[in-house]
Image 1 (spheres, helix red, strand yellow):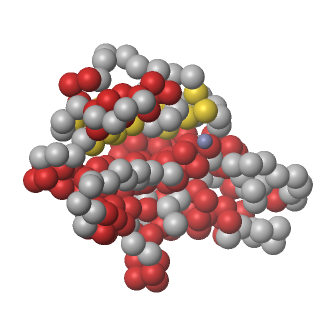
Image 2: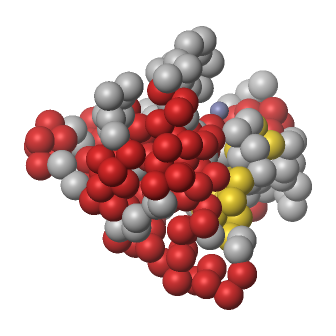
Length: 232
Ligand SMILES: [Zn+2]
């Protein structure tokens, strides 16, 4: 699936791919035909990839797409009355935050007018891209003009391409662009890896009263069995 932000601004992708909420609705419709009930897992999986890439626009719009999928599930559960909805994540990642002083609000607001993700920008850049062309591309995709020096910093990476990593198979300069982008969006990052933070966990519906204030993630398995009245 494309990132939600890239999909929203590309007519072809909009026609060719469903949103996470649309897939959630269809899955519920089909599974709900089973008289014995069902378990469905919906993952906003690209939020994790966006965090690994320190890609603020990708992360926020995919998180919103996940939020819309939650609404679809909750709307069904409230009508149904017999469905437990569990909303959580398996880990934190990269710890984005708002930084950089008095203009932080205005800079952060820029993300509202983004058309495309950092990945969309970087995957179309190559060894022959010029500094002015990259500046134009970022301005088109995200509405701000980086400096010539910053553009050259990003492009330098393409001259030394090599190697690859699990979360960055095309070896794109995610980190370099994110560090420059922080000056324009006020979004800074702690890392490009999973974090050891506590994460949010919310439940609603029958069985949600079993949820303690804090729980280890592997204990959720038994908690869900208990909520469903299944033996373990
Ligand atoms: Zn991950």
